Image (cartoon, rainbow, N blue to C red; front, side, top):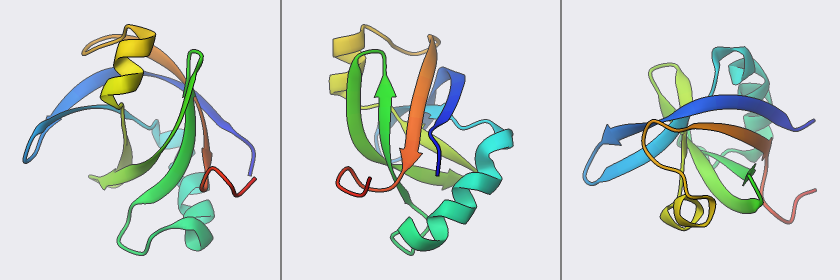
Amino acid sequence: MEDIVFEAVIIEWRGPAPFLFAAVPDAHIGAIRYAAMTASYGWGAVPVVVRIGATEFATSLFPRDGGYLLPIKVAVRKSERIGLGDRIAVHMRVGRPDAR
């Protein structure tokens, strides 16, 4: 699967603790669902490798309201100096870091 590239605004979603996320645009949901058939953990989370700015990190997409939310880790927010309400460019691929 090719990298998925998109821009998104960082949003907050409150669960057990506050987290910041980027919503994956609807245009990419089908490709992610297809790739997730072999990559997903089985409970809906989809492993991804993401690059925001110069920072690359591994995480998992969270299923939410028929789409996916990309968690933006604290370390990434600090290194890229981004936060709630900022527009970011995301380069992402479905899979684990060692699965290229």
